[in-house]
Image 1 (tube, rainbow, N blue to C red):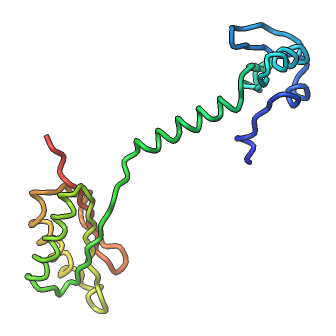
Image 2 (image 1 turned 90 degrees about the vertical axis):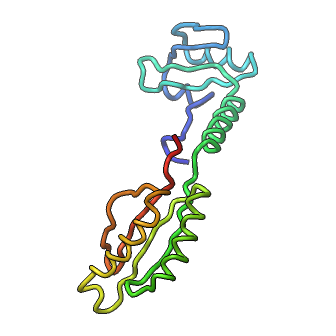
Image 3 (image 1 turned 90 degrees about the horizontal axis):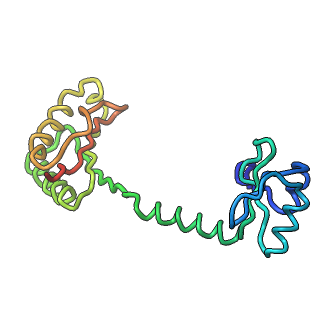
Length: 174
């Protein structure tokens, strides 16, 4: 557990301060001695949890910490469910690919785009092709001309090492 995750509660509050600003479920109790706040929490069958340790005096809340933690985890789980997961499919070419092969691979790319997936086109440059990447850029521009009606491009094609990369994603429906 990291320092950030460490929660000061119950008997640990006594070591923090002699008095606390106490907040109970029914409302604020004001500034009271820590031992009195702890007694109130124990009598209610709840926990005394510090919510603002840097305040003068520290702010402590009487609550059911287990229930509070459960609700926080539930909220985080819901937030993770609502996040959109982007699926990226990669299609590889060489700079000396035949037109029929380009058509076949672009057909697959269009299927992926229709399913809402992002597609990364990658041209692999081998040997001497790295010195003259124009042939690779010609291939990737041909591919772009074939998919531009169905997709938007995430920037211009880029030469990265011995690859030319281009990422496309489905067009937004209006």
